[in-house]
Length: 523
Image (cartoon, rainbow, N blue to C red; front, side, top):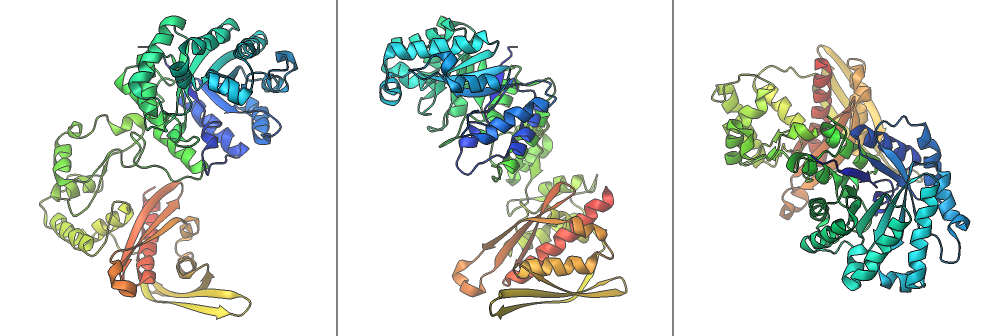
């Protein structure tokens, strides 16, 4: 079993993605998570005066007690008219104090002439002297050969000469970069294999996803003999993104038998993936292989029946190996097997042919016909199951609620909600203003309940979505409201459906409160 170095560039290449901007605190948290995973290298950024956050990161990352990963600073070869010792950027790389330094150099004559505006010989000298300067300073030097596959297609001899220049300077790794992301897998394999045969076990691979081949290219790079794979968590990166380490890492470990992370850390992959999405302020791609919520979600009745007999029927690996979990989705395709499986953790040994199970299935079928969906609202499903089987008393009873909207001069629109509820034989009548009718309702409900259930103050509304179900009905259309809530770090979804958006929202809000209290009572 070979060891493949995982070189993570989420904090540099990933941060160049549209809409992503990590703070220094974000970068430090991600660094710690990546080190916990056990990647070999973490590229922290480009330390120069225009990247103040990167400079601060390199100062503060020294304080982290990293156990597995080496931090790498990123830069480029020296300027053509300066010696390596005179180049301020190379000095800035050394000033970071990182054990590893990665520098990018030009492989493609097109870039040498059109971007650097220098000669082929000068470019080779820039590569060799830059690598040597950093290597003699005691750093591990990783050389990224930019646009290598395009360069090789245009002039294979010169592309190889750039690698020889880096090797002559003492480079520890020669990383072949598909910078434009347009190389197809068979071409990449052939070229990479040729370079491994010439330069030995020091070749790495860095691929982009512009042609949708980044992961496949990275895997074929390893098959060709590459010993290092560069990529990002969730595939974040410029344009169409980088090779997604969340697919590459388990593929290497589970499919090819390679060692890619610290021993026993693969089950932390899904949590790391979600953390990076959260800190990047991006919705998590739930259709990602291995780490997406849909990766092990089953909906079709035929599939689910087979899965109940043996999960290998429709799963290529066990979800727990990457820290994910199996999900059985309820839909109009569901059968009693689906229901029994979902209820198994709630009611061990429940007979799927029992009157209660059949009654619940009929109710769910009717609800789905009315527009309900429980795939993203499993909390509402659990509550309905408890209610149908008669083992859950409501936390409160609604007496009435009212929402009003006032347009006040110079103040704008003011939303006010009045809620009257009963808990046992006690009633509470509260009023609250909010940013819209749903927020006002949520605040008024919690205000009424907090005396009885103090935990409701910690319940957070994370996301709110509305979907029109029958748009041809115009203003009389039914809407489905999905609410995502968080309590004590656990997120869960609830659903409501009605022709009245406020009524649908109220239904989902009530479920979120009741489910939160139910979960807390079990903790």
